[in-house]
Image (spheres, rainbow, N blue to C red):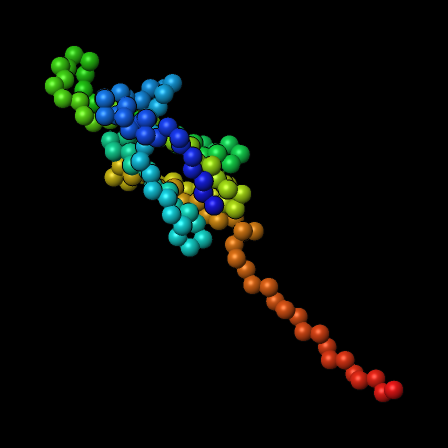
Length: 142
């Protein structure tokens, strides 16, 4: 099972409305979708304009951390007229349940969407249990 807690998510949205970009000490959150598809969980993060090489993924114990940075693509001497596109540092942490295989997570970034595939651990997959038949007992004549 995939668990997510982020009590300050609404504050992050307000900060983005007021143009506060993510910093190393207070990164912005990134939008996410998560769902189960068969024997794996799929998690997708929106990271428009983020170079795949600036994405940092890590797992420590059962916590998955996604960190990325979107740097401005204009020079320091540019006079900005409008700055609505989010920039700065983005980060998100997910708590992975014991039923997930943390060793075999795969990641792919395409068109600004980072997709993680987290397989369900073998011991957590549903399985059938065979029922053995006992041999017939011979009737004892008394």
